[in-house]
Length: 198
Image 1 (tube, rainbow, N blue to C red):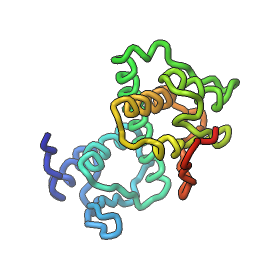
Image 2 (image 1 turned 30 degrees about the vertical axis):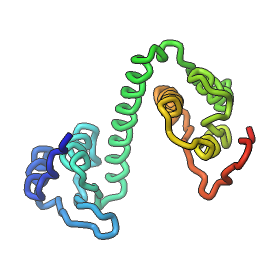
Image 3 (image 1 turned 135 degrees about the horizontal axis):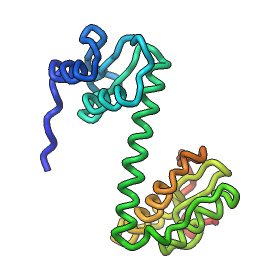
């Protein structure tokens, strides 16, 4: 499927004007370091609210532009609204994926009193895996993907893709970020040659 062309600078400024952003508050240039067209928004009279932030998001980042605010507080507010919108989209898509496979209603639900270790094991079991097959719990508020699972795969099969999609969908629907639990990555992890240590 062909993607729509990225709007021109002029079209983007016009779209931002419809959000209530004056043209003299907008600067667009190509950032060599990021490799992206960057929209810089000057200091505003008020902190961006959700409606304004989502309007700016739709006019810029959804079209491939990076957005920066001159004021760090206003930038933080904008990024917070956008991040939440993205998480809601991921949660909705993940729920649809599980529902289509009759895996949503029986999905484990995260309970802070039980903790991440037990929930991660339940999520893997729900998706037909043994504990620790895909998820590696680092501590009470962080988990990562078990590199051993991928290292032992000679190819990505439909089954392995299903398992990974299922586990990540369960984690996404449960919105672990709302419990201050994050997915992290460990660089230069050891690739096991025989058995994955649980």
